[in-house]
Length: 529
Ligand code: GDP
Image (cartoon, rainbow, N blue to C red; front, side, top):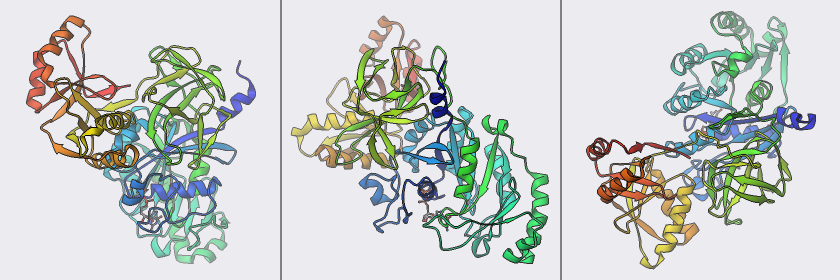
């Protein structure tokens, strides 16, 4: 039997990520969340290009230059008796693989919607991913300090486009210059908004009850009357919050506010900590592993190189599924069967790295990686099961990469392989020549690779076009047929960064012919680690 202290630690953990379309306000909300979590003292302007101030979750130079968030960072903070782990996800489309993998490591998501725009493309895509595991979703309608769309229409759009029922928990009173605050449906109280206090935690002013004349005095007769009328409609037309439907991913509690004005983020956090699931089980080929199991287990969903120039190393991010991490414990890396003693795992308190003595299910720990850890690796306390479901996607764009100084070939290869371990790009080495082909899902990744090769590996590289349309990972159960395939298709075969055999196709037609020609060989568009 697991002891009570251990269960308490598990029960208070909430691990979530924010999903949104770029510019909806994810970074700003992250910052405000950290403010409430007392992880930072005051919130500055996030990502104001050239303003010199950046959210703590933005680590790398590139991100600062471009004002986008490339890496996944992890932040832990206390809120309302819970210990919250917030996993930041890159917002730009080109980095979606990272985001997908991060979503395998959380138990719930916050969906942020720009209330002036409604449901946008990337939100749609990300929601599709969360639907694969029925991840519970909390919704925040942002930017109420601007003129927004009709709130009822926004809820309708979420329901019809994202196929999830909406249960408004707060309801906005006005918007733009007329934004007065929100009415909290469950608490039957109005929370009033004050402008110009975005950088701090506002003093909370509330009016209890909807029929309270104080409400008319505070927000004006007209708005108060309108609110009462509107709420009757809202209550009739929308869903009531139900914990079970929320946990099943069928219903989302909806909050309104402004991240910039720091209003409403705390309401959302209260809902999230109260309702979002504690650390959930994860599936292996054999069975589901439960958080309260005593033996430690976890999986690596992200590898990142050189996060901090002061620590020139690579870190593997591991989500703890069961048991407890204790400094100095022995872990088995299931893929290699090796037992390793870990005494220097990292935790991420608002971007600062600190050595942890212990960590629990739902937590993310950082393991120093000297090249032996791969994305998707399972670590256990002697068990041999493997967690599944962490995808790698076949790249869709390809370039040959070449050095300016040919003597640095070894450095280049090392850099490329390390960057590909992070999963941001794939590197392919054809069997028949010494080319190095970089494959990416989005074009921005090519620039990132060249920048990082320069700053982290001191090699200057340039790209050349190459006629490659697509790549597939290949495998074949029959060793003889595989050999034959390797011989005949030699000119199209390559090894990726992890030495996995892949087929490089100059055209889609070529790929389809190959698939027909070698029926015993399987061609995979994604590789599950
Ligand atoms: P991200 O791309 O989703 O991380 O979005 P950011 O947090 O960087 O926000 C994008 C832009 O919207 C920035 O200029 C923010 O200052 C602005 N923004 C974020 N939240 C609000 C809000 O509540 N009101 C207004 N008016 N602007 C906001």
